Image (cartoon, rainbow, N blue to C red; front, top):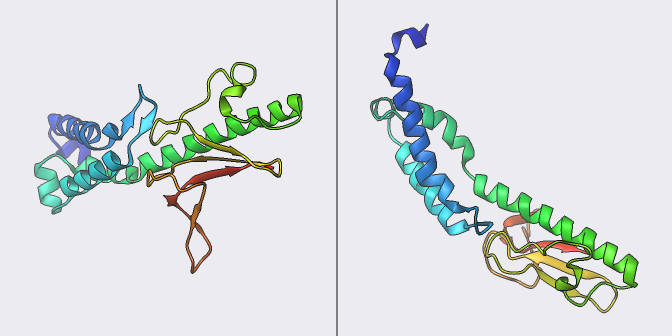
Length: 180
């Protein structure tokens, strides 16, 4: 019933404005060709989006931001979630290749480059900074593999753990995969 009361073009204006806000504020964090996600650009875009979606209900109606307000707020943190998931998938891929290498050669390789072409077609880069994933073969036969994480600071494979709860804060510290 409400849809019949709204002029025909109103919904079109709402869709266009939601698309513009998405394009200008959330998508720039994703550099698809370089296969990177920029935490700084994501934070700036989310801040701009929140500012643009702020104000009263009447202001959102007049500026055709009601649909954007309802839909785009749920995408806050999307860049972080995608980056964290992709880093995990990349680390899992490399960890599997490392284990296959170990089974074939009796030990983990000294460098990730040894996995190409026999075990990987290419070694994935860090989704945050585009640099190679950090890899260390340990003397005890295990390995450490990590991305610089959302804060974009390499911290030697350290996780950020909240002291009160013991829960890992994935927005701080490195994103770590420890091998057996």
